[in-house]
Structures are given as C-alpha cells and as structure tokens.
Amino acid sequence: MTLNDILHALDQLKADELTQVQKHLDHLQIQSSAGIPQETPADTIAALRQAFAAMREGLDEDDLQGLVDAMNQEYIETDIQSQYDWLGQDIQE
Image (cartoon, rainbow, N blue to C red; front, side, top):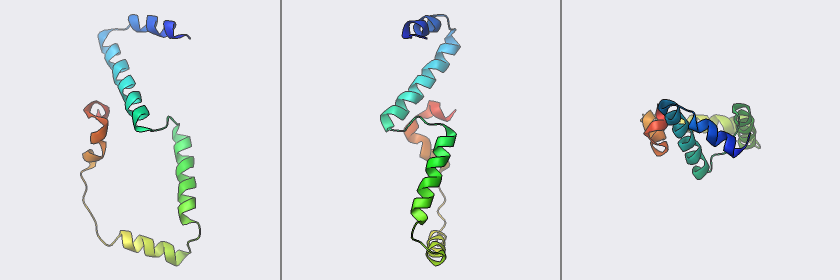
C-alpha cells in the first residue's frame, strides 16, 4: 500500500472515522515526540524483565528485603489521573 492509497482511503471515510484516525495520529505524534518506542506488549514485557534482572544483579536476599522495607516505610496516595496529564485529554478516553 502506498501513501497515495492511504490518502485515497482517507478520502472515503466518514467524519467520525476521520476523528478516530486523527486521534490515532495525535497519539502516535505524542509518542514519537516523547521518544516512546513503538513496540509490542511482548517486547515491553521482555524489556521490563531484562531491566528487573539488571536491577537485582549483585544483590542478595537481605539487600532486596532492605529495598522492599524502605519502599514500604511510607504510603503516598497518588492522583492516578495526573500520570496521564502530559498525554492530553483525548488519549485518556
């Protein structure tokens, strides 16, 4: 499929479908400008597992328990919505 094919297909869309396309493009633009890589969920999980393994490297069970204890010293209530503020209101829907 060429860019011209895509543009032609866009010309055939209804207004509500164009709105969905615009939201998707806006989302991609935000991710691109924020440096967020376009990856699959499996890629994300693999990267997280690798990062967690690297964080644990060189730590024994006492060290890990000390980290857990330190993180559990104080509970901080957060505003869940605030973590998405930088994405814009349309992305939260």
